[in-house]
Amino acid sequence: MTDTNQTLLRTPLNALHAELGAKLVPFAGYEMPVQYPAGVLKEHLHTRASAGLFDVSHMGQAFLAGDDLGRALESVTPADVVGLKEGMQRYGLLLNDQGTIKDDFMFSRLVGERDLYLVVNAGTKDGDFAYIAEKLRGKATLTPKPDRALLALQGPKAGEVLERHSPGIDQITFMKVVRATIAGAPAIVSRSGYTGEDGFEISLEGRDAERVARVLLNEPEVLPIGLGARDSLRLEAGLCLYGHDIDETTDPVEADLVWSIGRRRKEQKDFPAAEKIMAEIGNGTRRKRVGIRPDGRAPAREGTEVADKTGRIIGRITSGGFGPSANAPVAMGYVETAFAADGTEINLMVRGKALPARVAPMPFAPHRYKRAAKPTQSGATA
Amino acid sequence: MSETRYTDQHEWVRVDGDEATVGITKYAAEQLGDVVFVEVPETGRNLGKGGEAAVVESVKAASEVYAPVDGDVTAGNPALADDPAKVNADPEGEGWFFKLKIADKSQLEKLMTAAQYAEFVKGL
Figure 1 (cartoon, rainbow over the protein chains, first blue to last red):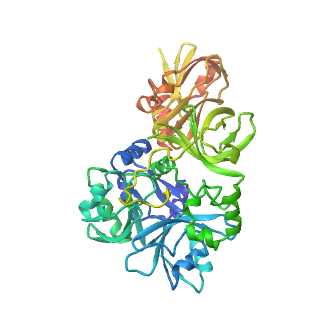
Figure 2: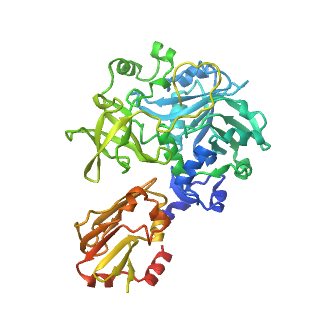
Figure 3: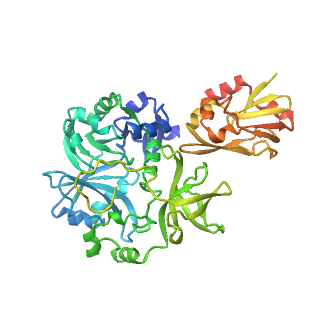
């Protein structure tokens, strides 16, 4: 793996990762920290107990400009973009013409600004940006921001820590987004993340990123957290990893992401493959994404076959491992819909043996988002 | 008198008469990270040199532990089922994986000494 490092891209925090003793690995074309000296287990538990700082600068950030921007973006996503209020962020699926999932992404409407701010996955960003630019040609202009960094500060102490460096920021609630100043640096801050915990995502100019990261790491509550713990945290939170749990072979209904389709969008059926997807919502799909808990202690990894009690293969695990907060192995995957009910007994084929497991509700660790006090709409979470 | 030998797959073998105790080296334990699950072989199982003998999993990945020599398993470490973290805390002591009755002691001569293994790790 060291041979290819010369061709890998580096985030503005690369030197800081090395200084902190990170184990750096290739990920989505970047040299990224998979763990720091504390190790994945401690990093995971620390994030849930206090606060963790993640470098996610490899993700794709962009601004979208144009007239009637909401309608333009709605041509490639079933999310309600038009109805997104100022100062709010939302989760959306990027669909291809067949209605399967090209990516999942976040989009925001900043207060007093016409443009939309997008964050897409690292491994798919070049393809996504080309696709969006092509599909929205003549209606909107996409401007990628490869020079921007993105930090995530996650965990129950994230609010009080960030408040010290940006007075007032702790007032914003889940899925709100603002322009703010963090330790003197201009930033776009959203109250969201990928751990199931309360926390923030902080978009900065690349040149400010290392200084701001050092300021946050200097707080006693904060440890640097690598991609290893990022993965175990999001799996416990039941959140999909693109390219594993969702991809261009899965659609929103199979993936159990129908909550991300706007109500108006369902009525108007004006998104890619809407007829097919609406029919699936009505009639059901052949398979469904579910949570899975092995009965024993052995983790079942991605690619593990799922069998019914007669030995017939009924599905496959798409993410699996050990959940440090669950203190047990946890997984998600696709099973035939007849086996998708919580509590259904199944077997996981691990190293040639059938290990008993059960379909289980997600998340495996409760979400602890700081939601607005007023009653909200559905039970949808991102 | 016991002697410890090492494999290029990062197992250690402590030889005491006809019996060998096998585990993974401190280097291997550090590379794996926090161990969360270990599966040791059943007593009586016949193992062939280089064959899969045990499984060790960290938060992120699963790895195999191979038999360093031919032999029959005389014990698996029962403590690792409840406390797999022993592999990180004391890899070359309480974190042992299994013991076996050595079938052919001449196979030990092909394994590395402590000094050779230290050199080997330095070159990785």
